[in-house]
Image (cartoon, rainbow, N blue to C red; front, side, top):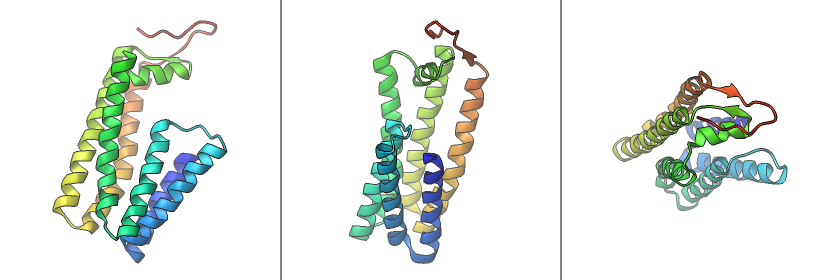
Length: 185
């Protein structure tokens, strides 16, 4: 449900941007992100810390863009959040001594080999850093309209990239034996 709300808020951002500009679009996405966050917390919907952090940052940066009439806030958000996610994923694996994907799937009673989880982790870290770098390059060297087009394209690129990672991981996935702990190799 939350993913659908995120998609709708992104589409609303683009629609409002094309008719009313970046400041009103940023305010709309800020309010919707805050509503999504509050709904997920109070309705106790399943949500990750990464998802909730993203919603709060989007709300903060969107509101700052509107309040200060400066598009750099919303433009920097993509770079900042992707760098934070890349570092968080790397640090998670460093401290847990196991791949994020391996642990996540185990919690769902599925087993993947840890080296497969590490490949998926690394692919996601590289993706986050690439998106952060490309976003920075685009908003510092091109017009706001080009950046909005990039942001629009990024919705679809994210889905396709996650589909590829999911397909890769699913080839190595097995159900955990019932009644035993899921330990990956």
